[in-house]
Image (cartoon, rainbow, N blue to C red; front, top):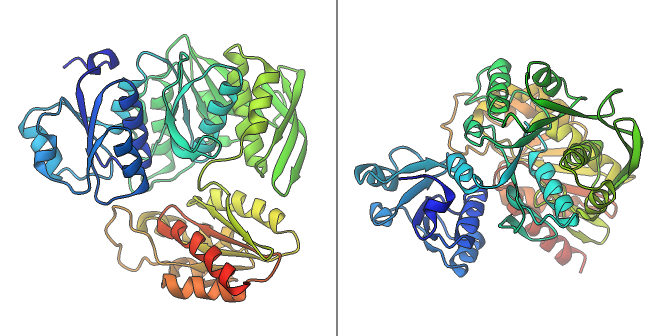
Length: 461
């Protein structure tokens, strides 16, 4: 089968794990191209319901018969090799692609910009999509989070540019072959797949090697991992951004507010305007600088790009204000690596001002907990009180002796409460006006935020 976008028009793609953030986005884009979409997921969800409304045929179970008649099968990394639908597709000799390979096909006829990095790629890719929309470019995009303004994680645009979040977690981002890329940072994570920092660095080198020769790499000069990556990159246009002297897109005159940030932007030594964000944190100014550098190099105007960045209101689960009740603010955030938690809680501390910062953290994966327990403890101690749930396993099997207690034992303000009901009752009861309560982690801890808001409404009624 010719695996090109044009060849898929009128065909049927079956997505195993269609309810996931990345997979659902691909399904949306496939549907918009007139491709017939079917899929399966382990459970029903609002995402599955939305896809069904768009015309997809979705089953909330995995059964071998679901792939019968499909022209192509796509699976997420969460799907095991012995999944009955994967097994059946192999038996029928139906072409099978990973999510990354399928995304590469869907954007093969566009000018693709891949956004990679250990942290910040969802926010940066969302910022890029919004900034390009403000320029009238109407880009397509596939992002691992929902853009707050549009309520969507994927869109088929009328323009030539396709913005894609490039997930490094399993090394599959080498499938993309983009025209250009942004790398926000390079740090050791996903220790289940990358045993050493060097193995992560090598994966990013392999990714950069797939950028088209006529394209370019935008990298953060302030990040040691990104700078090292750029230093080994040959025969490719390089653009740097950050507060570092000599960066192609240099930011200074930085102001950090409770729910926003500003900085002057200089492009190759010349002031082009001011970045004014509605999202907090120094890290988001850096993300915006990377977007601005990329947009300018693509030929778009600084004024339009800055206007777009100024309208950006964040993405789902990235410092997302879920509700405010009687002066108590409840925020949900996806942070699950010590570095992410450090920058997120620094911003949250500023947001809390004179109030307390109370964090409910759910470690994600046993391997990550084992590798970074001390770093998690140090990062979480920024909070006035941090309550830890048990480890969210994701697809991992337990590691003997590895629990959330590995982290709390090394904390000053940590407490281990694995029971969801007990945790929510505790924070609802202790909350005072001015406090910030944050649910933090990549697992199902996010489900607690609306429960806490409802409980606060009842308490202060």
